[in-house]
Length: 297
Image (cartoon, rainbow, N blue to C red):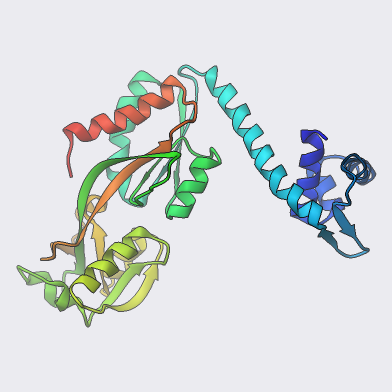
């Protein structure tokens, strides 16, 4: 049994088709069938129940599939780490992030580029806690900036800064001219909130619950940009991280601080503890930490 055979087996299971798996693997279907028959012969177990229309895993096949996925992932990780050992300042830096870091992440990159001008940088949104852990563990990203408090033995979680969630309303909204606003005053307004699975949603709902207020949720969104578009048309109100609102002012939208001790959150930098990281990638991590030693939100 070798890794090529395991990869063939996994591709068949994932596609539930010999023909589709063969196309994916760029081999002939008879060659793929023979490889699986040889694997079954070596192991002494039938792995797949075949019929004219369907393919099903046997009990042995189900066990092997789980193990094969793990082994192939580990091999992929080893290959990636070996490639990164060679990289000093030429390569790719893959960073996951939340939407609200758009105002400060370019400033960190400017300084980073001065040291490593030949590094290619890939920025991607990674939002839910489950996605953060999956992305780091599958080596899809080197580090992730997140507002998810990650407590895992294999993941390093470093707090970068704390920030408030602030109210955004249309300039014609009655609350736009109020000096002090409490969560109770938001109870009957059409409320815009992030979808389930987002940490910002949990933070907002916990704040309302703490003050025994029930928001009237009208809109659920995945991006703060969408929330601001709805507010711009006076369709509702929202609570947004203050860092997201840095930059040019939108004259249609008014931001207001809420009188509540619970509307704050922490933004973290996360990365795998035991993963090999090249000097160029480690420098980005250290540079991000250093940035917030001299800059606060």
